[in-house]
Image 1: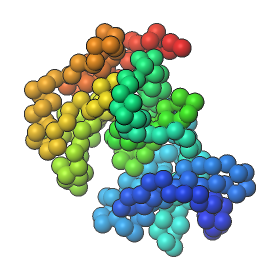
Image 2 (image 1 turned 180 degrees about the vertical axis):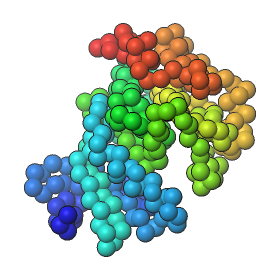
Image 3 (image 1 turned 90 degrees about the vertical axis):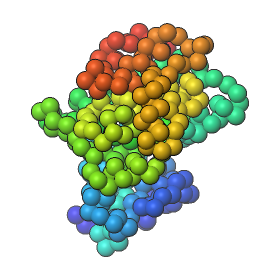
Image 4 (image 1 turned 120 degrees about the vertical axis):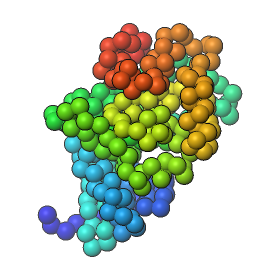
Amino acid sequence: MSARNFDEEYETLKVIGKGYFGTVSLRKQKSTGNVYACKESNLSACKTEQQKQLFITEAAVMKDLDSTGIVQHIDQYFDQANQKLYIVMEYCDDCNLTQYVIRQKEQNAFVPEAFVWHVAHQLLQGLDYLHNRARKDEIIVHRDLSPNNVFLSKNGDARMGDFGFTKTLKRDGSWLKLEAFEYAYASIVPPHHHPLELLMNQSYNEKADIWNLGCCLYELVALEPPYLKKTLAELIKQIQDTGVPKVPSQYSERLQKLIDNLLNFDVNQRMGARDLLDMFRLELEAK
């Protein structure tokens, strides 16, 4: 592949997010005038090979994804000399789900149930694609589906993004296990959307994404996460003691049933994306 001058191809308009390993900026493609979100990851800042591999996996996974409910991949480039990885993506021009919830709380306004079902539909379609259709021999597990990583457009579309924690799973009934550095991270950062099996450092599979979706949807209706304790031990105890929390009374029993299925403690009984799409098809597809 011939060398590219990425900054010549894409003009930076503004930085819209910043972290230890890099930035997300709004960039304009000079040849088309189109505006995209660009994630720039600094691999030289990674302290371990495992951390670096997460970014490499993100790029490898995203380039092949094409589904409703998932941020569209546009372009990517690895700057070998500077150890920087650029991933250019669809720009969702409203806000993320966290910001949307904050906005609703400030306005003292509950989210319309029709919009909750719409978001659920799009994200379940995305998870069904990752888990069942994206690759013939592998299941793609997002592992970090949280309100921070669900992006909304002004036309009402919802897209999951940030595949930096993604892993793949063979279609042979095998399970994943958290690596030591991943579990240490979960112990430090309040992991309000991690499923019980990950919090307890147990093996897990793609059903972890289903739990994460349940936490996202519950926060959308209650305007706060389902479980709020800050330490790992307190959070595990709260989940076990509380069970599945009730949605506010203005929402339907069917929506509560969806949340109950998503937040099922027993991973073997927790429904998959395809079955959930079938079970709640009328509500999910309602206009």
